[in-house]
Image 1 (cartoon, rainbow, N blue to C red):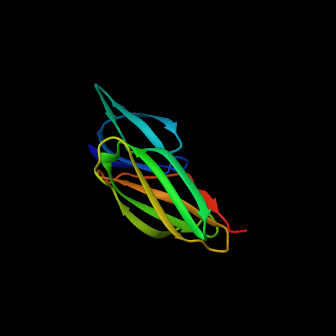
Image 2 (spheres, rainbow, N blue to C red; image 1 turned 45 degrees about the vertical axis):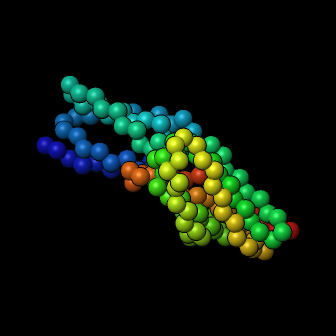
Length: 147
């Protein structure tokens, strides 16, 4: 019997969907907080290895200058990135989209940036990475504040 399963791991903020037949065991390995490197699904008499998300976050920085917030991020495996949603929050829990940045399709690594007028409250930012394969990942959260 063929079933469709959905695995959600809250610490890794990644969703993996796969199909299988029969009994299985699942092993995940996480190489950084920004990505799951591989997922192995083993069923009787077969083994399948799936790369859940290939876009790698190399760096993610924020700064405030001249009343502007500047976010910079660099990614590896850039050709696999479709778009980036810059998200902001004032409480660090509920995020809204602040901007949409499309991937450049440049091979290997590339740098991206976003800026906006700084708010006079502590603001949290993260970037939602959407791969061409539909996978979703997030950068770590960064904060900015005008003092």
